[in-house]
Amino acid sequence: MYELIQAKGSSYYIESPAKVGLVRLNDTEVCLIDSGSDKDAGRKVRQHLDANGWKLAAIYNNRASSMDADKEHTMEHLYEKAQQSAEFIRSHMTKRPKIAVVLGSGLGNLTADFTETEELPYRDIPNFPVSTVEGHKGALLAGKLGEKEVYALEGRFHFYEGYSMKEVCYPFYVLKLLGVEQVVLTNACGGINRSFAPGTLMLITDFINMMGTNPLIGPNDERFGPRFPDMTEPYSAELRDLAKRTADELGIAYQEGVYMGFMGPCYETAAEIRAFAGMGADAVGMSTVPETMVCNYMGMKVLAVSCITNMATGIQTVKHSHARVLEIANRAGDTMCRWLGAVIQKM
Image (cartoon, rainbow, N blue to C red):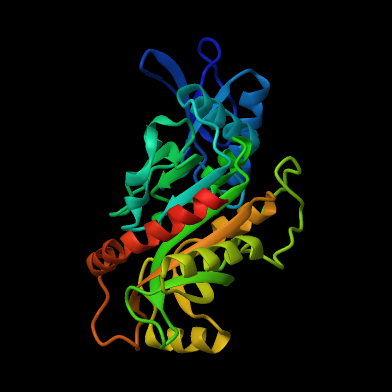
């Protein structure tokens, strides 16, 4: 484990089992610690540095993460980091939306209907991760749909990209501090229910978490939400009813079903799909579930819609490809955007 620590003053020497070296980086003196596999030694060094005024600037543990290797379920100072991100967004955007929408793979067309659009690339927002998946633009937009002000996240973060669960859900902590009360999630996913076909739009009624972890594991900050949040109604019945009425008015066909969250990045096996079907899943994808849990934890109402871009392994007769996923998502995206655009204007 390597840690980069910025010096408060001049040269500093620490006696410890960990190897410590001083170097200069961009005219700033820094201390490099190599504690190897001895995490306890590294922890003692960090405590010693902190007590003597050194500032922890970054951690490198051979993956793209701000997580400490011995704290897999913690993002240190999460509330303060989210505040910093929120303050930056407020200072660079004039709108104050109460609604946010997350645009999944190939589903970014909704923002074409925005007016008075403002945009911030994720890379410019302090503490924000950056999207690495094709079909995810990686920008926060604020605009108007009719008379409704809306945030749009063009691109999300996935557990399979190497981010921690806290990082995957980080934007939602920021949105909460920005005053967002309702969140619309979209995704491109695989169909398990044999009555579905590529291009089907599915209104999510419930979820099954098969990701092997939970974004709420770790110390709880009551400023965000309770230690044991309720998941009786993860997807708001009120918003689902609104979505159904709106689809009927527009003549848009849809299905309802249960979404299963799968870790990825490989697609599921035929045996797994048979097991998931037996558990009651209608569709399977690699996102949405962690975000749903965090939004419910913080008291935000959630509406979610899936675009079925392929039938799952063992049901469809061809092999999977992300290019095909994007093709179908783009094709069905116009209908989804027309539907959700109308729903958002009524929220």
